[in-house]
Length: 430
Ligand SMILES: Cc1cc2nc3c(=O)[nH]c(=O)nc-3n(C[C@H](O)[C@H](O)[C@H](O)COP(=O)(O)OP(=O)(O)OC[C@H]3O[C@@H](n4cnc5c(N)ncnc54)[C@H](O)[C@@H]3O)c2cc1C
Image (tube, rainbow, N blue to C red):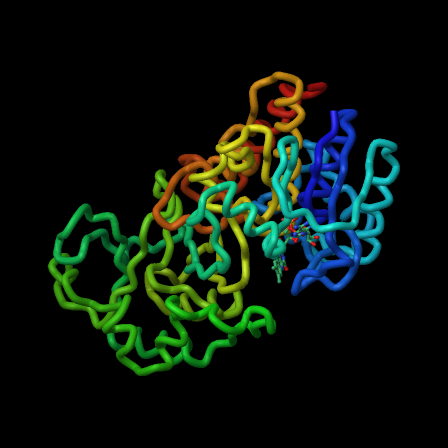
């Protein structure tokens, strides 16, 4: 059986490897170097477009646990990254040129692997579409037709997402503005003195330098909070931070109120309402720490504003990978709404495992939801009004009742490791 893999990035290469290992023939289509994306600069497969870091390896971090899960599932990207690593403390960083060529060499060891250097603009059955956040225009049109317009986003303008467990609830309270609707919002009040500190830090904070292809209409209709702040001292207080309609729960009306809104059903994650931002990640940590309830906030995802083509996965994909409109078409990588190098590669593994299962007449599977891989699939399957891409974090996992933060992280990590081992043995040989 032959499978077409469209896109030779991290997800496409990972998917191809798993299909080939299972004895399938793979036709991979990669449009570079004949047609480039605005960010890639080589013809190599699995090119890392920006940082050469694949993030933390520490055992009690979400990225460290994800690496354990991916190693258990025999990730090609992880294996080659470890073989081509460069010293980077507690992170896994690679020599990007060696990494890319070693991936291609590995795929070429399979006699059933064929690499075609051409752009694909149609979607056929028995394909895995892994064309990434910078999918070509022709393929974008095909995807729009295939999934229905309204299911594809082109920019990611997202506010940070905070882990609920890290919010200081002695300094925040639940409540709906003017008591309209359920008291689902978590309100973080500020005094004038606190607002002044926050405001000054915000307007002076370091911003991400936009790439040329990201300039233009990116910010229209979705103003970053730092731009709003720079328009005047009170601009935020008349916008998302307005302190009105919430004072009934407090002795005194606050000067400003930052609101957090639930991001997942379980209420483990909250986004900061109206805080889409282009600040650097360290600047987000330090500036938003001036909001008293968020002084020690843990970020499941930082705010971003960048070019990113991604599907509304809950609407159009089963388990975050299989097209609802045609069960013989799978998607993989950043285009499915996962975010990050490792998450994209993970998605490639899961789509390949399931393409193989489909072709062998088995039911599709996803890892258990107490693993980070499974929790990410679950996130991609849950409809929300404003679906935003997601990377792995412990906040996605079903809660564990352990009070101390360090012990809780360890408990999440231990449970996930045990669970992925069981999952891997349950699908072995299929
Ligand atoms: C500018 C930028 C910087 C990023 N920086 C980071 C970072 O530092 N760290 C991080 O963790 N994540 C980063 N990401 C997010 C994400 O992790 C990477 O984009 C990652 O490479 C996604 O993997 P992928 O396999 O889904 O897509 P890609 O790696 O982009 O692979 C998709 C491939 O498909 C090809 N393709 C596209 N359309 C077609 C077509 N029609 N026919 C044939 N081939 C096609 C492309 O040429 C490309 O090779 C960044 C994203 C962008 C856009």
